[in-house]
Length: 90
Length: 96
Image (cartoon, rainbow over the protein chains, first blue to last red):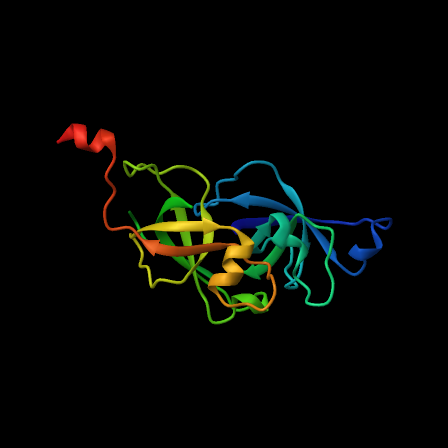
């Protein structure tokens, strides 16, 4: 799992029917100091996040499994909202 | 599995059900000689690791399911599965 910052929303009317009712966001992976890591991704949201939120997301095969009854065709899925980061100075 | 250092923790209220009652930590990969590398990760703690500890981090969904005793696969893959006490490498022996 990794951290990411939601930068915007994606609207797609025509998409795979398994993605119906899923919200798509532009998600920029970030590190603990909010420096971007790599390219921004399009992510499926499962926790009612909004633009500007700091979230954590899961990639790979596990991204298809957020719902107990069905799989979704996604490779980046937002699974939690970050309320607070407690960082230790090392 | 990779070597990481625990750099912090995350407080999170709204999250997927599989993350409920889990300690969510922030880990950063390190090289065997202790230098930080890029690619900060979020990982679930299963061994009571603390901030500053060098840990073993596994990133694989099927193994996470086995360790956390889930009945089915869940959208969770990175786990802290060990606290590293000591690393012996050829280069560190040379230094002595």
